Image (cartoon, rainbow, N blue to C red; front, side, top):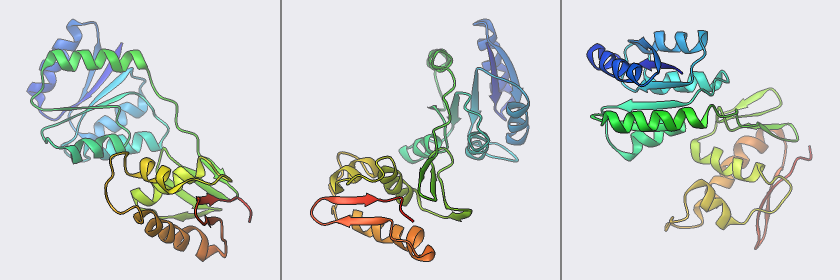
Length: 224
């Protein structure tokens, strides 16, 4: 099994490489993000261990570039940071797992084995509703050939609607999908994002694809 380790702390990289090699992994090392991106693009790996804080290109950017290019090799991110926002950013950019430094080598090895067993994910399928294209892998949206810039929350709401295009999606369901089941804020926040989406995906194009069904929810139509 072949692994790419992208880590700028040379001593740590050699220690991890030695440990993984002892478990039967063949390990390539990159000491900066740009080199790691190049190696990951040029070679086939069973898994990638990717530090976040890297020279030339950080781990988030490397992960995002790989996913945008359709490379779905399992990625575990390492970081000296600790906090839910760093973990969320790692996962949002396409990483499969996250481990904070300092870490236990036993835990790293167990998670590596789990990643390799799962194998690479298939790129999520882009959703098309009329001429509106929603790409969950790259978190991108376009109408026809025109790219539409959306915030992460706007994208989450739109994705929830696109997955059930032509159906009425209740507000509560959108809250659960775009926020979480434990959200205790004002449910009318959904209306704010629906209005924002209309200004971006409909108004500039003379469309009215995002429909409010009074008392029931919202529907995304594909009619032009």
